[in-house]
Length: 150
Ligand SMILES: Nc1ncnc2c1ncn2[C@@H]1O[C@H](COP(=O)(O)OP(=O)(O)O)[C@@H](O)[C@H]1O
Ligand SMILES: [Mg+2]
Image (cartoon, rainbow, N blue to C red; front, side, top):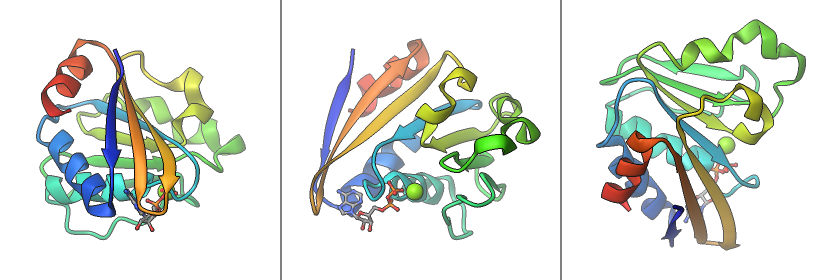
């Protein structure tokens, strides 16, 4: 079952990410897809803030993975938009089992490397301030999470 959330502002997206954070568990994987400027990085910022991470979240486009280790759980923020041939040297799959939380922007580009159990969120641009977020949970943990948050 899919879940839909309409975000009417950046604040809505930040708050939604904070609510999902409150249901976090080790090895959680969240996959974000959608055009540039739809709020994927905003979502990561809200999540990171709720984890208690004090470092500023910046888009990891040029280094693919950024690790934030000063929150309640480690956060691994990936942006695989420009991954290309670097893929094999990063060892993406290792991150899914390190006990932290992995959030991946443009995850569709590495579909074959994603774990079976994960939460997919698709961001759709509606107008300047409005986005529709479509949640697709894969696995019971993520289904329960969506039922309780959305
Ligand atoms: N409802 C909304 N949710 C998230 N961001 C929004 C929303 N409305 C407007 N914005 C703006 O859209 C931009 C989203 O940027 P960003 O998160 O970097 O996108 P992406 O990572 O998907 O490329 C920000 O400038 C933000 O202020
Ligand atoms: Mg981004």
